[in-house]
Image (cartoon, rainbow, N blue to C red; front, side, top):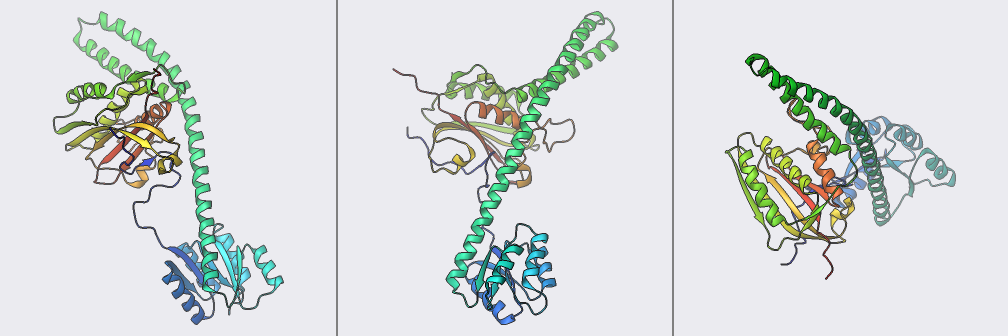
Length: 400
């Protein structure tokens, strides 16, 4: 069987730039010039080249336009009828520090250029200028904007990962201590259970307390797993055998109004993972899918061999080139808006009602996949369901 090299586009947890799913927004440029004819002509040229041009003729209207349209680049004439272009650049930089300003003038001088650069201008253009020079300069400006945004997103992601690591250490420590308390409660309640069997009312109260302790134990187990960084014992798993067995368990667990199907590609590679963690992760995803389909729907499990090439966009998210098995869990539920999808892997983040979810399910699945050397991908839109892809590395082939 030939391994696949193309899969449904998804969003990997570490993506620096989310995959584009909508037409790219036009690049916005603010033109500030008191010469109305020149400004209109320049705007027309930029519109033909695919830019969105906003025109202002004086500093007050320019500052209002900056606040309203949030352009990435401003073309500012040095000599304005009212006000000074260099002073406007200083005001722009205070109002929007990331704005890239280009000075434009017909009266070039070294002193003016130095003053403009000291005010925060990125570059300097002299009238008349060739359109090719202007467009090349604008492209440099927007490339700089893109790099700055990437740097910001990387820093944001690094900070998030550091917070997650700190939270894992904190929750692991708290859960360990809480687990000791629950163990004492459990022992005492079981003793009581044996001694109140002849009193139904008390027996029911003890049973309820035992159920609460059981729920607390499951929660602390999740917290401990989330805070645990070491791997654990792994084994080679044949998904062609393991997944059908899981389907039998799920058919007994899920509501009758949810249809369940499994599609396995031929000759699936083995994966080397912690079997119990694999089963728990897939069960967790199935229960999340069930909650997303309160009125019923379809839940599909798929698995196929997959090759990540060096030029694959997923590589930027830490998914190393090589051979994988991809397990997909696909539901027809309400789906996730972008704001929810981008936070789905944050610990303790949940959209469920209080008491209905801990916000640890997906982060735990993500942690399991990472420990296994893979990555988790999410593809979801409102009213279009959700697809979770688990990229698990192919087990190392044994030497003959």
